Structures are given as C-alpha cells and as structure tokens.
Length: 340
Ligand SMILES: [Zn+2]
Image 1 (cartoon, rainbow, N blue to C red):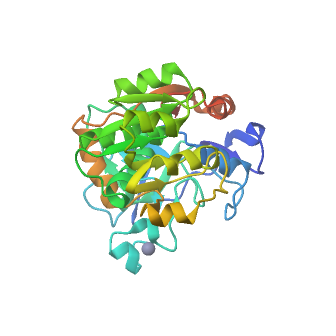
Image 2 (cartoon, rainbow, N blue to C red):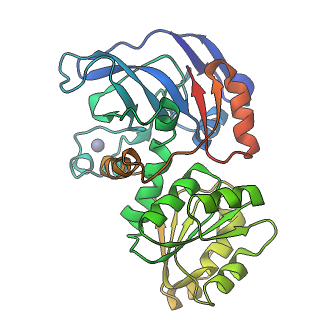
C-alpha cells in the first residue's frame, strides 16, 4: 500500500510518501480502506519526537473509511460499510477497560502515537474501535470528529460535570478542541465566552454559538471576563493553551469554579498562588482524550446534527508536508484533512 512514514524525527521533510507493507489482518480485526484522515497537533509532536514511538512510524489519529475485510471472529460488520475509528488503543481486558475507563488503561495510547495511525491506504484495527457512520456525514466530516469531540466531551461532561445554564470560557476557539467545546457547552445551554487571535475566528466562533468573543492578543482575558460576567467570573474554563494564558485562566474563575485542561500548547510550566486556590475553593482538573462511552455519547449528537464538525482544508495524502506546514502556522479554523 501507499503510506506516509517517518524513519526519523524532525521537520516536515521527514514525512515520506512511499510503499509500505499491507497490514496483516488478525481474526479479531477489521480491515479498513482509509478515505480521510484528519490532523491534530499530536501529529506534529510525534513527528518531532515523542518517547515510545518506534520507527518507521505512520502518523494519523482520526480515520474515516470503508471496510474491505472482516476478520473471522468479528460479527456485526460487512464489507463496504462506511465507518470511523475511535482514535484510541487500549487493552480491552484490564480493570480500567472493564470499567469503561479506557483512557486510564496502562496500555492506552492515541492512534498514531505509540501505534501506527491512518496516514496510509489500509489499517487493520480491533473491531471494538470501528464505528459505522450515517450517509449524511461525508468522510472528511467523519474524520474531523473523533479526537476533538471526545476530548471536549470528556472535559466538559466527564470531568467538569457541566450543568445547564453555567458560564463557560473556551480558550483558543479556533482550535479543533475549542470548536467542539463551544458546541458541547451550548448543547447544555451554557453561556459561552470564547477567545481567539483574530476577528475572523471570533466571528466564526459566534456562528457556532459563542455568546461573546475576546481577542486574546488585543484584550486582557481576565478583565474582559470580569466585565462580561458582572465581576462574577465563570463556572468552567476549558483550557489547552498552557503557560501563555494560565494566569488569566485561573483569574477568570468564580469562587468554586473549575478549570479543566487537556494540553499545554504554549508551554507546560504553570504556577499557581495556593492562597488563591484554597480561599476561592477552585478545582483544577486534568483531562486526557476520553472513554468509548464519551465517544458514543458525543457521536449520538453528531449523527443527529446537533454537533457539527468543521473542516478547514483538505490535502491529498501525498502533499502531507504542505499540510504539516499549514497546521504549524495555526491560521486554520477547524480540521485539516488528508484525502486518499
Ligand atoms: Zn486496559
């Protein structure tokens, strides 16, 4: 098959579009022909080098395609079926997996991180991560859903336990997680304040349902939030920016507020004044991907049209270097999808 593999870590030049061996289908697996694979910042981090990645390696977490072969032990699927893949790898027999907490499994990894991903024509995957999609969703849309929507759902619903009518601050509204978080928060009739780096992204965030926009390069987030909330602050901050906005994120919380973070794009060293943490009785939560239960719940809303994936740009797989360069410029609003 054709695949993009990396044989060493580095810049976009290490991405090689080349021939690779077809995957061997196990009897408990499903073979999927990849039609679309959406990109995430994880692709860039893995490309630059993360521990636990063995080379050569195939990137790509968010896969949509068609079933071409079904393993002998697998029931309930047929060839030609349109599917997406849950972007996760887990053992499916430990206590955490049995409890439905796949993202706490000792073997948990994101597809395309420690296991080969979908930047290739064929993938052989365990049946439990294969999910049929409705005809109303094209492959580019389907590939744009899994990682960011399961992440946003786990942050807001699984971790922060969002309740109707709360006020939610979403940082980095133009990112995939931001776009998903705005919509999930609106599903709970929350009042949403979104931040982004330019007016165009803020306008698009408003079209997705955000009630207010803050330009984080021109305005001070904590001051704007204070004004917008009549000095109260917000119930929940959805954060993945890290160092650059951390102090503001914490300052924006009302007493008893919850900050939930799933990333540290601008840096991982953030400090906190403990007096502020205890006297205001704040909660800081970490969140990593989500569970199969989260994915199932959020897909129900996507398939019903209540949550919408946003595709920014598509590239043919062989132009993957240009796609990585585009992603690293961070000018997109929505997902970048590789097509096969
Ligand atoms: Zn497990």
